[in-house]
Each structure stands twice: as structure tokens, then as C-alpha cells.
Amino acid sequence: MQALHTAATGMAAQELNVQVISNNIANLRTTGFKKQTAAFQDLIYEHIRRVGAQSSDQGTIVPVGVDIGGGVKTVATPRMMTQGTLSQTGNDLDLAVSGEGFFKILMPDGTYQYTRDGTFQMDNQGRVVTAQGNPVQPTITIPNNASGLTVNMQGQVSVTLPGSTSSTIIGQIGLTRFVNKGGLQPVGSNQFTETPSSGPPQDGIANSEGYGHITQGSLEQANVDVVSEMSDLIAAQRAYEMNAKVISAADQMMQSTTALFR
Image (cartoon, rainbow, N blue to C red):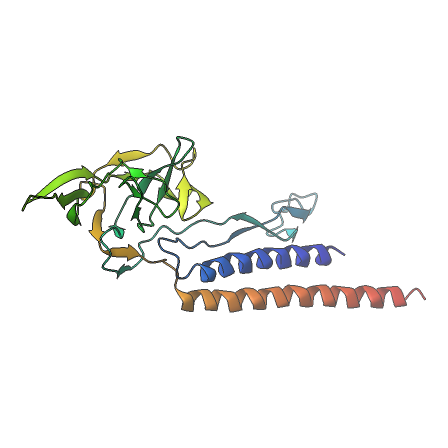
């Protein structure tokens, strides 16, 4: 019976939907995390009688057809790149982007990855790096014994050097944007890589046209709405249960049909 297979596709789709929702909830407190949603499409149809077919020799056209659907499939899990709220931390190397742009990170193999997680630290060489020790681009090296570290909205990094009473600009943290940021490939550790779908990276300066600004002493929180996720979770669970009911009903119908031949 086709209903068994159709309902099975529905259960598989809702199982994946729950997995997406659970990942969103699990990353509720992950800095710079962008939530995902599950997108579905119906499967190919069996056309028992096509719309517009002739129903008589006189050329009568049927107004509607008879089409039996094959179920549902998952086509994408798009990532929602909306702005998350900023949370103040007071740490000098905690940076948040308000608006467009990603921090550019140099990886050990010479490639670049991109992140909205501005939880930066200083390594043993004085470089501004991620939690994994990978330097932020362009590379910023903080001189030894420097004090008064500040990062303005444009990403300019300034410090007060020993023996000086005024601040000195030692570098500038840039931002990178993409034509289709939803096309970036997540690779874990709050980082993304470019893909043909995202378009090439466009490096620029924060607080300039088309780029967001940088806020020092703050971090961007995940854009996950826990109330919305719980509501979606309940809806997915009910949809899963309904598809299970269909399988149960189809099984009972098959048992009744089999009993007729005993």
C-alpha cells in the first residue's frame, strides 16, 4: 500500500526537522550562532488522470485530475543570518559585529575561514587570535607591556605604549562580507568557509558603506528564539505522530483485506 511509504517519508522528514530544532536549542548560548530551519518539498506524483485530459469522444475536458502524491523530501536546511543581540562582557578582546560582515581568520593550512564569534585572545607572540589560536586578519600584534587596548567602530586597534601618554594605532581588524552569506559552509567552531553559492569574499573596513560596525567589550549572542523553537518542536512532534497514525491505519486496512481471503 502506497500510504505506508508516503507516511514513512513524512516521519523521516519530521525526524530531520527535530534534529535541526534540537541543534538550534543546543546552541542557544553559542556566541555568533545562526539558527537553521528545515525546508521540505512534495515528491513526484502518480497521475492517474491528468488535468485537461479528454473525458469523451466529443472533446470534453476534465476540470480536475487524479494525482497521488509520493510523500515529502527535505530540500535544504537554510541558515538564518539575522542579527543576534549584543551582550556586554567588558573584556577588551571581545568584539561584536553589528550589521554585515564576518571576522576573517587565517587557518594553519593557509586558507581562510569566517566567523561572527569575536571571542578573541592574545597568544604568546602578542597576536590577536581565536580560541583555537588562529590569528585574526589582518594580523594584529600587541606590543609587550602595552596598556589601554581599544578597538573603535572601524576596527582600528590602539594601545598606549610604555613611556607614552597618548594612544598609538597598531593595526586594523577588517570585516568580510558575501553576496549570499546563507551560502557559506559551516565547518564547526563557529566558523564558515566560502562556497560557489556564497560568492567570493569581499574584504572591507568596518563602519564603511555596506559593512557593519565593531563594538568592543561585547559579544553577539545566538539568534535562536527558544519560545519559537519549542513551538516548532511541538508541531514537528505532532506531525510525526500523525504520520505514525497513518501507518497504523494502513496496516489495519491491510489486515482487514487479508482477512477476506481466509
